Amino acid sequence: MPISRTIAMQILSAGIVLSAAATARAADQPLTVVELFTSQGCSSCPPANANLIELARGRNILVLSFSVTYWDYLGWKDTNGREEFTARQVVYEPALGLRGPFTPQMVFNGRTSAVGNNLPEARELISRAEPLAGPAIAVNRSSVKIESDHGFRQTADIWLVRYDPAVENVPVSRGENRGSTLAHTHVVHALRHLGTYQGEAVRLKFPQAGRNLRTAVLLQLPQGGALLSAGTDR
Image (cartoon, rainbow, N blue to C red; front, side):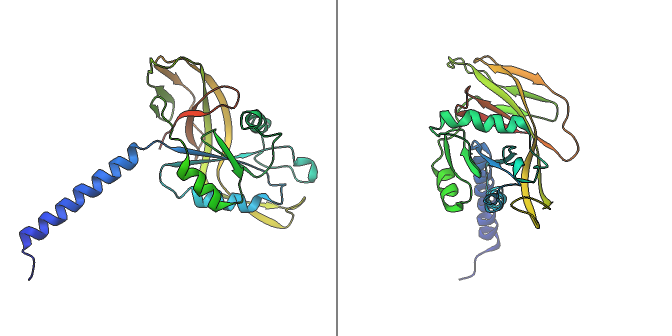
């Protein structure tokens, strides 16, 4: 029996409402933050870079690619490498129960770690990641607001991250990856400690990001501890 026009419109309207509700629920879900520590001088890293490109397509996932510097001696200096990125990874290792830094390493919400070239394992860890349940973070191009949490009895670090969401292709002419063009995404170009959070609402200003860069703010327990909250400007 054919469906009347009125019933069809009701079904369509209900579908639109349900779709909008599902989208709103997804938008309300906290981010899962995946940090990849990688190097253009590391022969094991290209698969992990490719995996990060895949993970970046996921909903409510913030991927960040930090280029470390300790493989520069192999003949190729990473064009995106920064000592502060290496320092961030080094601080993570004791907190994660690891003996020292390695590449490629993925860290999930600051709580768990895996070798970055295993995509099924990365997806499994994302699916099981403990949600970020800290105070809400609202980020725009030049400021961040972190809501109050009067039950918070610790001190947390506030980190400003500038990253490029595009895919960057880097030709490598020396070292272990010589002759290859390496694809990266969400490459971090700056990491800055903005201050600390102790449960009171915080509003901080900072310079606008450079062209094509986005801004993320991470709230994290000290000394490579767990991430509490994360927000981006888009």
